[in-house]
Length: 361
Image (tube, rainbow, N blue to C red):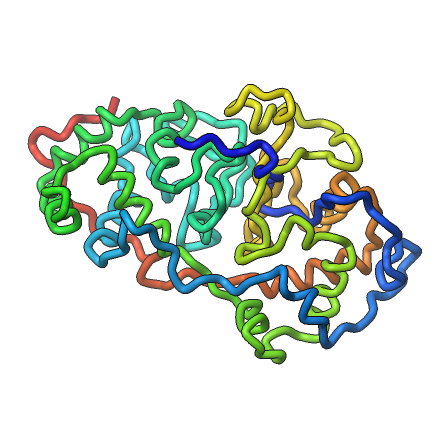
């Protein structure tokens, strides 16, 4: 795995954060000065330069060495929903990243195999494959590289590559599916092909939103309130870190740039790099679907998006937002909601176990 530059990682802390400033913060524009209940200025149009930092969601996220064929995506979907891949055969990828809802599980800390609890909140899987790295600490550059190491964690699926492959290869329906999906690899059931199949399915989990229509020129795609919120989002320097196709997910950053974060003991990216400069550094999350993925932060400790927005402005930018400004920004974030295609979210029929399929451990 290619080691990612430390400067590339920001706050993946929650699946939602709002605002981190890479420059020393200047005075707030008059429209967002933190005084009383001052209203946010109505914004119905924007300088093209202000919107140039954003991009519409791509229609496909694909790798040259993992093309998204129908057979491969269908196989990856079955593996995604199959709890037999976990140690006790009691949890699947979908247990923590429910594609029928928000792509997450809406609880602070997920329950892994045998009910074990991890130390980090499950982020949404929607659009995640397009991020510059995977995991709160940017542990892997590609979603395919993240699959098996993540599944191997004791508080997740508690398995390892050898055990997982033994289960999959013992199921006749999977053996046939791998032959159809990986003709160029002779249908081999390996860690590489399992990762590619799940990665192919993950790469299809895109959620285009009204925001994308707005960026494409449809001025009516956002309400006036949402446009005002976009103005407040830009004025509050949120777009310094939350920009691009995914409104984030393009770097890592320390939690508490402008003001020390009060209570986090998570070492963040330091666990991956052992570099002192990476203590408390996390991947900046995408804000797409953020209104649907509470609780927030890497530890799921913040339940309110309004609170999370205020905390990010305070600790990452060094400014205070009023309640009015906060509500306006949150209104804009609602325009980032999208829905995964129904055929990808519907639970598939899984192949039956074979006579030699290992039992739960």
